[in-house]
Length: 293
Image 1: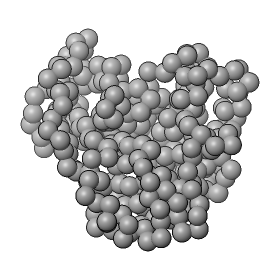
Image 2: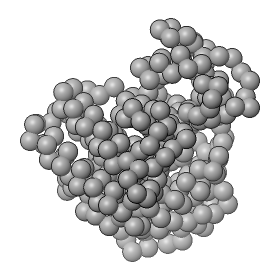
Image 3: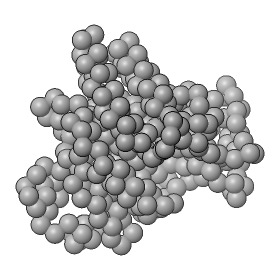
Image 4: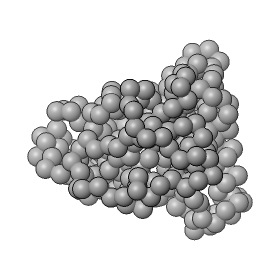
C-alpha cells in the first residue's frame, strides 16, 4: 500500500499491449507512480510486466498489504492500482437506501476492492461495512466471502452479519474490530509470550476453517485484527477458497508475496500447509522486527 492508500496488485490481462516493466535490479520508473487526476470509480492503470519485473515488485512495491495475482504462459501479467474511498463520492444516498435503519459513520480502511466504513446496525451493534465495487467480478467475490464467513462460527474468526448487493455495489456487514491489527501492534512491540499466544489463536482459527474445507490464502499481520477487548480475529477472507480432499489445485498465483508459500507462487496444489506457511512467516517476521515494511 502506498502512503496515499493505493494498492498495487497483479491480475491476468493477456489482451493488453503496453510498455514492459523494469528489468531486475532496476527501480520502477517514477513516472508510472505519479498522481493522476482525481478519479471516480472504477479507476485503474494497467502495465504489462516481464517476469523479471516481479522481482522488483516483490521486494519493492509489496509489503504487508499488497495482493498479487499472476497467470499466463507468456509470463506476463497486468499491474493495476486503484484508489480506496474515492468511488463513494456521491453514493451516500445509495448506501442509506441499501442499509435502512443503519447509522453510517466514517471510513476506517480502504484497498484494492473498495472501502470499509464503521457504523451501527438496526440492532445497535457496532459494525464494519465493507463496500466492494463491481469491477472485474469483485462483487461476486464479496458474496463468496460473506457466504464463507457465515459458515465459520469460531471465536477467532470475524463474524458476518449481513450481505447486500445493490446497484453495482456489494456490502458485507461484519462485527467491528476496533482494536487494531497485528501489524500495528507489532510496531509498538510484542513480547515473546504475546507472539506465541497470537500464533496459537490464529492457528486455532485456521484449523477450524480447514476442517470445514476453507483455505484463507492471505494470512498476514494486516489480516489479523483485534476487538477493543483484545480478542484476536482472523479477517479478510476475500480470496479464500473452498476445497475438497487434501488440496486445492490452482491456476493463478494469488496472495501477498511476502507471506506466500512456494506452491502459491507456482499456482500449484494448495492445502492447509499453505496457510500454515504464511502463519509461520507472520510469527517469525513480527517477532523479529520492530517496524514492518
